[in-house]
View 1 (spheres, one colour):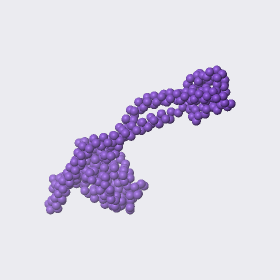
View 2: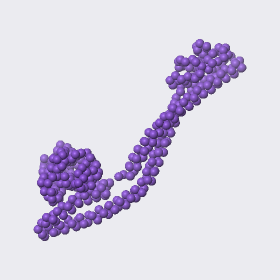
View 3: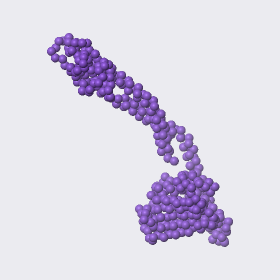
View 4: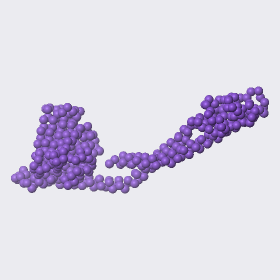
Length: 391
């Protein structure tokens, strides 16, 4: 498992949950701040109204011939008579409510101040208005939310990494133990197979040794799966030409003794001679896992058919058995999932195969019927084929 990806995923989930929890208090805070912002806007309108009244008072004291009505960048103001007819106004928004005080109509707010009669140019009312925007409030809330989210995300990453340190140490020791164990297992397996072959060359075939060799080959397949997961899953694979026909036949011959233990026959129908550009280790995991699973889940006295033929999409390699069938063709690719627990194994073979096929662009099709058997078909695309002869 990728530790960095795991930490990022969980930090993102935790941060998302915190953000969702914060939505309710942030909503209350937003409503409160909008109310505060509106009160501040009302005070600003009153203050500007007072400035205009003060300017008119000073004009009256100076007795100048012309009064320059105060103008503001964000505020509009005007003088109105007692019938609310404009004497002079810079307000271009229609006013509907003429009751003295603070009013808001949509995004436009205004303050109406009653003036003493016949004191300021025969005006009875002063109106000061502006466009009220809540953008500053929303910006502040967004800044708070973003700051909290970033802080929680960084803290989540930090603490997840700190909490994971003991487990990383244990996993590192476990990985080293498994690697050492795999190395130790490989040596006796090789010795068993070599000595059985040497014995069979000098002596008549022994059914007990044949069983031992078949069991050793089954164990070897599990060993290679484990070895692939530990050493090769993150490695850079070297691709080269592989004769698919010869390779598949060689692996069929290898598993013939294993199949014979259950009185199963492996038949091959190879109709084309195809050379592909692929990695031999990955190809072995595909072929060996399919043959091994076909043997494991087939009934006794049945046959396994291996076919290799050209198709419109490339070259199709299929493995068909007469076994128990598959109930869930999607879950079988999950790591450690096994439909038949009593059959043994670790449930990692098909997970490896699926990842190899997906990464290489190999199309995988499965047909299965419970109690009748299954067929796995792998189509190698034209891009992988170097040379192909035959149907």
